[in-house]
Amino acid sequence: MATRQTRGLARLMLAPSVIFLFVWMIVPLAITLWFSFQQYNPLNPINDRFVWFANYVIFYSNPAFFAAILNTLVLVASVLAITVIGGILLALLLDQPMWGQGIVRILVISPFFVMPPVAALVWKNMILHPGYGVTADIARFFGLQPIDWFANYPLFSIIMIVAWQWLPFATLILLTSLQSLDGEQKEAAEMDGAGFLSRFWYLTLPHLSRGITVVILIQTIFLLAVYAEILVTTNGGPGFASTNLPFLVYQKASLEFRIGQASAGGIIAVILANIVAFFLMRAVGKNLDK
Image (cartoon, rainbow, N blue to C red; front, side, top):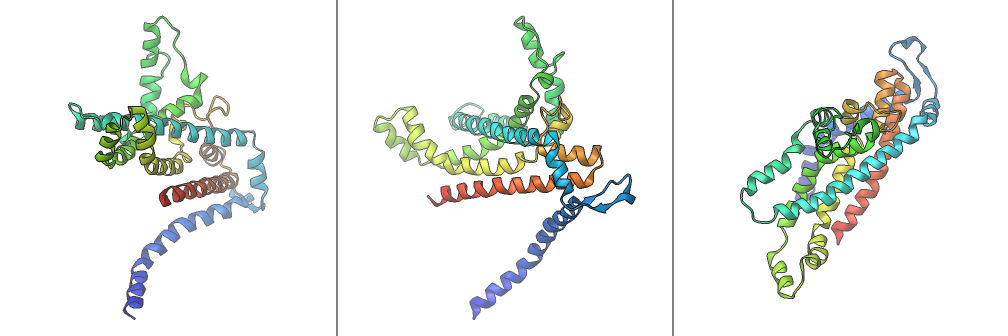
């Protein structure tokens, strides 16, 4: 009886938070779904009418749609590869005893606290600018022609910016996971004659597997919504070369004022994100059950 009362009291105390989260998530989604079936333009609301799935067909038929989907997947996969591999290398480096270790760790983690628009402006005007950026000065020093990165390699430039922002997060998670590795296991492996590569492959990497899955899961959720870096640097161009799905939705909503098509794109983005999250959660669940 007491157990039932305790469970009932716990559910009652959790109810306000659950209701708030439900309303906070479901109400905007329901409004977006409703507008996705409407032909609505805030500049001309008189012509608002119900068009069923026409917005989805138009959004799907947009020449930029498949380019945006491909760019979104390439962006997510590339940033994950860079941050996971780079995070492992930095975690191994920061785990070694060194002078000023605390300061080094703060400097490595600090890019994660820079706001995306600020990071994009720094990379655009101070690092990758073809006239006075750091890369241009390095190219001239070696007698080479500076590269206009955002014009010639727009998506690659966005990937570098986003990877620079998320590398500290991956490093922090993987360093925490690495420091939980039992030192006796390392010593035993060394006494058995295992080299660095053997210890890394058979001992360290399996131990980091849970940290890696957490990094992949959390970063993927946020990388699917990358938007500010593209707006500040390339504005989706040249053409559709750096347009991803969130930026395409922004163009339809804020530039063309086609709220119905933008809402349809938003619903498609939510479906895509949930599909990716579903498979990632299954992968993380299998990993954590081992």
